[in-house]
Length: 209
Image 1 (tube, rainbow, N blue to C red):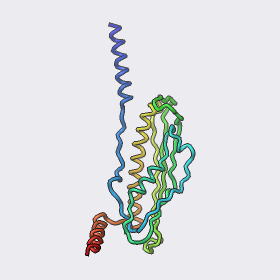
Image 2: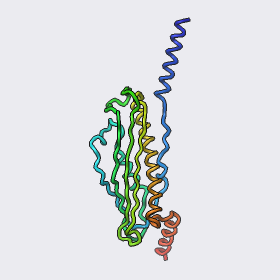
Image 3: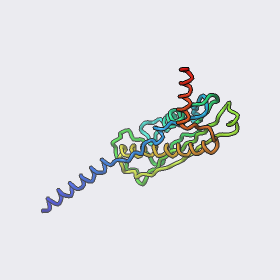
Image 4: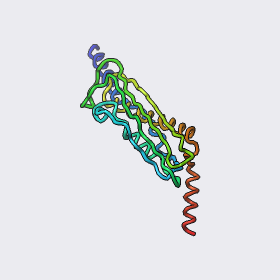
């Protein structure tokens, strides 16, 4: 009877451990990827003025750099649809922050630092318009800083999932705030998609006349 209890206890531990290892983090996805924002300018320039620290490129460290996410967001989210002028979008900050995280080369190693770890990101982006008098005195800027805490005794693979979900939530919030600031401080800069479609249709009709 005692042996059966021991075996049952071991099976319970294994099942619980299996549940922990199979735990998944819900990934919200990038909400803005399916919708383009058309700007009333002839061209868009994306300039990265942030100089990352060396650790931002250490693939074994968390958090990882968010430079690529910011650059991809700006280059794919915004489309030039105007006749003149240039929108200049600058990445001023793309810092990642961490506390208590270790440099782990084995992504399956269990971390036991003791106490929760914290990591996060800070971003600052600004847009201004050149060669268009109506926007000569305006610019829109967005700044965002967020931190997430996790227990330090979880596997590195699970931390990577947490970081992935964090970045997606972070970028969605950054996009929401940036769009709100553009509408507030640079009204008229964005063009509705249906207007762009009408403009393209009209140009096509003129070409076929």
